[in-house]
Length: 307
Length: 304
Image 1 (cartoon, rainbow over the protein chains, first blue to last red):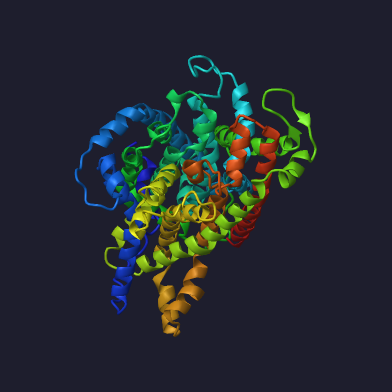
Image 2: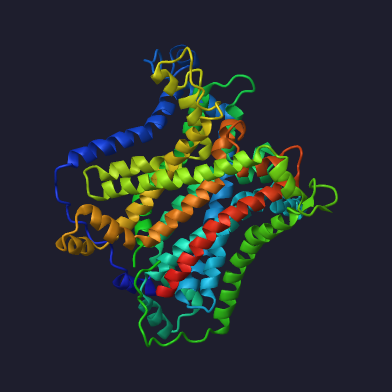
């Protein structure tokens, strides 16, 4: 695809947000700085506390509370949390669910958004409403019928060892796709509206079909929005808790969020161990966010408001 | 959400689709539509239907008419507290957390130093799962060695922030806001970045002060973001589940409609008809938000 139409696309790329001129330096700057620093501190403090707790032995914090000078710091809880909760396996489960769910959702949503915002189909607006409104329904409203439905859909043994859709990864993947479609369609349709229609017209003159207009022309221009959405969606699917709780009964198939339950003892809960587990569970989403942060904010900037 | 129309008059209409185009359209629109019907809309209708029946999930389904709803309102003690909590949650997010997120976005957008850092830090809680937020809340607010009680220096007579049914709902709302604020902030920040600076300059030339500029000029141009944020606020408030479930399974002061539904459906009782009736109540409340949103969007689309 070296000589494809994409090479001409950057000419028509929507103008980036103009470089912001340095704001006027006024009095009050210090007040703002102090305020923001204080709020930021309040926002990370709980996280830092969790990290701090996870590095200290239980006896130490039990005696002296969490606000005390540590007698001893170690990563021992991390090793213990990792092995005792079976986190590795759960993490794989989460990836098995999240990766296909995010990719398929973005692909399908991108096409719907393309059809709605770029093809001027009759009924496009209705279609947009259909998806967006669907995403706004509370999850619990759809839970029961899905539970019943999934219990009645048979799957061959090579797809699911429970022989039904219930208690298989498929259930959680499909639900995530169906449920997240609406949001992605909404964001992508808004984004695609900001792309100049002229590019498509040029392509139509050149005889490009719907698929080419979508895959070769529109999609490459949507990269920032797709990156932002992929980050968001990955976080959401990764953190999901309810779907797996309801649609999966085999503990071996649960996603990583459930591994924390394994660290919760029946009668005694070692909070420092749980803290270590929580930090481990949270780490992947934090890393993804920090790595993709720039794309993330750029994507939202272009997507949510650009006229 | 385009504010201005890129559409020009007199543009030639699209040519009719070829057969291949139609095939692509049918397949790639058909799959998501079918999925959405199967996963979202079908089950929603089914839930409404089931709410008029009594069913344990295994045996026969019996028509019960309005029985479930009457029981819900009259002999189900957690119901009204749950409704109250849901409304409270909505008000808290809508009147406190969301405006605070907007305020932070405005401060950061003014181009203070380290803005990138603040932005990342404030957003960080959003990537955490509510289950983890629930756990961190225990770490902070627990009675035995909770950080807040240690800080208050009342270890002999600790405040039971999470166990006291008058206090815990507030603590949970603060914890939920911890994530909500960051999300709202990033959305507004994205919106503010794309506001044309010329608008603000024009307002300044006309003698508007900073506050007037913001409320009369900037905020109205953010209407699309406002709509999105409003919807997210309503939805987050109604969907709240994980965090209270992680703390005490949503009991003892933390009843929410979502918890009651889950309890009735996957609990030992498995009262599916009854659970569905609660779901329909939740649906009715959220329809208010959804319809408002759709009306706004339709109006916006017509303006384009």
